[in-house]
Length: 98
Image: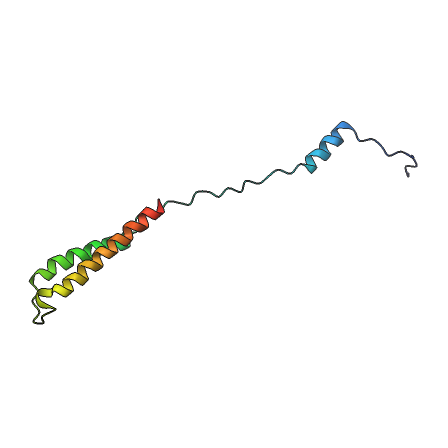
């Protein structure tokens, strides 16, 4: 049966609360979680240490006849410099991760 009332019905208290609940927007938590902490990359650190130790231990007896290469001087510089560069780069990575 149709409602022919000239005035609309007044909502009850519970209907008003229900309407407010539907209109209320709760904000979502958008804060990102802390990224997991990473450990030092042992795959790069151990070869760097081994590279430096081998350079020092194995190059002590090398004698090459060339002037620049005499006593393995040039090779010493390359090997030790490369090992130190590997170690420094790994330490910098570890500091950036903190």
